[in-house]
Image 1 (cartoon, rainbow, N blue to C red):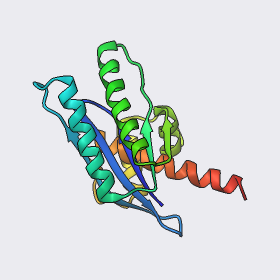
Image 2 (cartoon, helix red, strand yellow):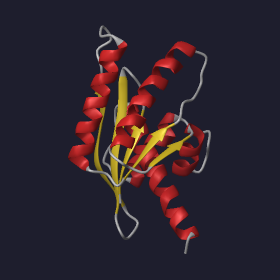
Image 3 (cartoon, helix red, strand yellow):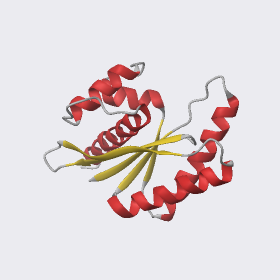
Length: 164
């Protein structure tokens, strides 16, 4: 099973591709960020995100996709731009006919660390351990996307056990 995890954003959108093998082990296939230029208009940035995401879908051909849900902090303006990026991401994933799951940040943290209030360092270290990486994944948005993908694989596995 190959899952694409997405940590949405307009300046930096993280993605992580994780494969779960038949024995339950996890493998990091790829991770990085899609960066857009701050001087470009929002429509241009959203178009770039869409085009690069479509290219990633073609390159990796995941079986599933998972997207982090919005966490509304104090900055409403930032939340609105992230919501626009999420919309573009969801459109690209739907156009690829992928099953799409969405996860709240605390659910991802709970799935990865066993604690819904885990901090960034704890999350990155558990992602490193679960994927047998030599170093913590960087940048933060890419590490978060790997966590989204891992949480999705955990959730999918649990749902599969419930249907047996």
